[in-house]
Each structure stands twice: as C-alpha cells, then as structure tokens.
Amino acid sequence: MPGATAGGTARRRRRRWALRAGAGVTVGLLAAAVTAAVLYAKLDGNITADEAAARELARYEKERPTALTKDAQNILLIGSDSRAGGDNAAYGHDSGTERSDTTILLHLSTGRHSATAVSLPRDLMVDIPSCLLQGGKAKGDGERSEPMFAMFNHAFEMGGSACTIRTVEKLTGIRVDHHVVVDFSGFKEMVDAVDGVEICLTKPIHDKAAKLRLPAGRVTLNGEQALGYVRARKSLGDGSDTDRMDRQQKFLAALVNKVRSNDVLLNPVKLYPVLDAATSSLTTDPDLANLRGLYQLVRGLRDIPTEHIQFLTVPRESYVYNANRDQLVEPEAERLFDLLRRDRPVKVTENAHSGYSTYGTGDATRDGKHPGRPSDAESPQPTFQGNTAAHDTCE
Image (cartoon, rainbow, N blue to C red; front, side, top):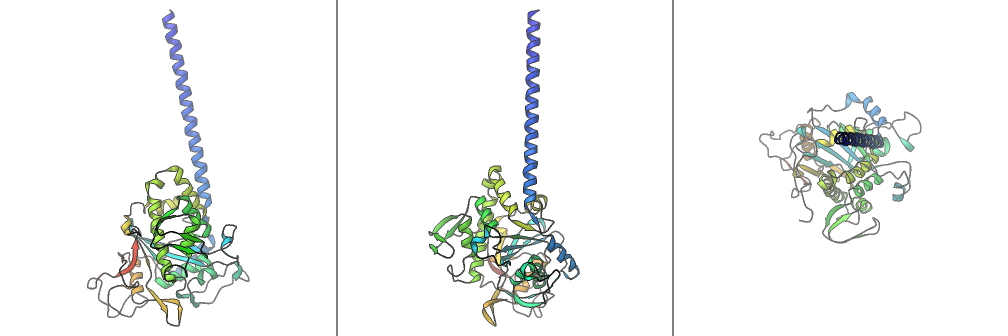
C-alpha cells in the first residue's frame, strides 16, 4: 500500500519536526532564563550595602524618631563629593575624606499619591550629635566625635551616612527609613545611560571651571555636562548655594521625566544600561541593597502624576553670625517638617517668597507646636517655593 507508506512517512516527519521545534523552544526559553538569571545576579550584586551605617543606627535606635504613619517612606539621598577611584579623581585631590555635596530628603506619601524632595543646604548650621569617626578622620577603632554646632555637610565628612541621618533626624524630627549615596561617577553614568537629559537655558553658559560651553535654549546634557551644571556655583545664577539647589531640583525633575518616558522604561535595550548604571553607583541601607528592595521602592513612584512630584529647599536664610552660612527660617521650616512627619500635603509654587510659607508667625518648638499659631483647620495651607516635575523650564 504505497499511499499508506507515504502517509506514515509524512506523519513521522511532522512528529520529528514538532519534536525539534519543541526542543528548540525549550532551549531558547532555558537560554533566556539563564541569561535573565545572570543579568539579575549582576545587577543585584552591583549595589553596595551600607552595613556600617546600619550598625551605628541600631546603636542609637532608642533616640531615633518614631514614624507617625505606617506606609509613608522617607529616603535620604546623599551626593558624595568623594574623589576616591579613578573616575572621581578628575574632580580634585583625594584627601581620604568625603562630604555631602548634595543632600535631599525624599518623602513618599502613603498610597504613593505624591513625592516631595526637600533639599538641605550643605552650609546650614546644625547640631551634629556624637558620631563614630570614619576613614582618615579616625585615629583608632571606636573613636567618637563630640557633639558640635557646625555646617551640615561636616556630619558626612566626619561620620558618614549614619552621622548625616542622625543629624537630619535631630533637625527635623522625621524618621529616615532608607538612604542612598551616589558619587560623581555614578551620577554621570546615570545621565549617560538615559542618553542625556534635556534642560532649558535662558542664556548661554561659558564656565571654564565647570568645563561648560552651552548655547541658550533647549540643550541635552551628557553625563559630564550634567555634573558640571548641577555642581557649578559661583559662575551661574547669583552665585549662591540656594540658586545651585534650585538648578539641581529642576535638573532632577527633567531626569525623572526622561526615566519615566516610554522610550526608556518600555525598551529593554535602553532599560538595562540604566539599571546597570543605577545599581553600580549606589551605596544603600541593607534593605535597599538588592533589586527586589529597589523595585518595591520604585514601583510605587511610576504612577505618581508629574505635577505631584515636587522639589523645594528647606526655608533658610543667611546665618546671623556669618553671611556665608545658612540657618533655618522659623517657624516656616518647622511647619514643613511637621507636614512631612504627619504625611500631610505640601504645596509648592515658584511664586512663593524665598521659601517662606504663608501662615502667621510664632516661635517654633521641638515638638512642632507653635504658641499663638492658629490650628490647621483655621490657618491657610502654607506654600513653599519650589517646582514640580511637570514644569517645563523653557516656558
């Protein structure tokens, strides 16, 4: 029966083809799984866990503030000016110490309806607690500093992230849940990984010290240019640190928009370099020092409307004894801290006067109460100078 023989042969061929196709799919899936596992392990291993800070904070757990809301999160973002390492050495001599070039307290509301980033000036005069000395500042294991009244960035130089966190908590009464430290090199890599960030300049920039030569209008900054732009102080704007912080906030808003764009988040080819650069440049508390921890943190941010992602500087003014230093403006600063502690809405506007809020005056106290101040129900909502991620700097 030639027909039956031919039919059987065809069926056998189809079975062999199906088996080969199935095997190919299986091998492909297995290869993809292995590749994904390898990439995940690489990214997961990139992050440096700040175990020393965790131990130091645990030592002072009883004196740290208690969180007033369960699901709100406060993350301290620290930009280090460390010159250690080949890439960072280009920005100056490595003295063995590092300072907090930029510090931002990021508050994520319960339900992740809003995100508020508050810049803390590096020249702000604050009370720094006794801290475990680190690096070249310590002469021996366990040596601790005396409590002092000094510039805010001295806390990081002297005692690292743990000392900075304890200083912030003492200053604000806000519990810091997580912290992230990034250096010059890491910042540049992040910007380059997203193919640059677009900003708008009202006039050309020619800054030899920052190695910046940019035209007016819309400009896309690469990593090196972005670092010079956010760090420049004397040659841009009015030369003040306040102006520099405003520039940093607007740049971060532009960076948020770039990372959130579909061109990055939905494109695996572009997303992996971003994740690689981000994880490679971070030192975080142990709970965040893995992809799962970072993902859980970032997941709640992706649906926040850009108009609810806010940037502002803590109300400050020149220090009464030294015009080159800063001090808090009270009661405005305490009012801001109180809103963040209680996870209450913070309103920002570019038209607010010098970071001052709009409610009446009164002497601030450590517990957040202000003698003679109207209750929240009676007083208008305070407004602080700042901007949102929805703001277009070219408008």
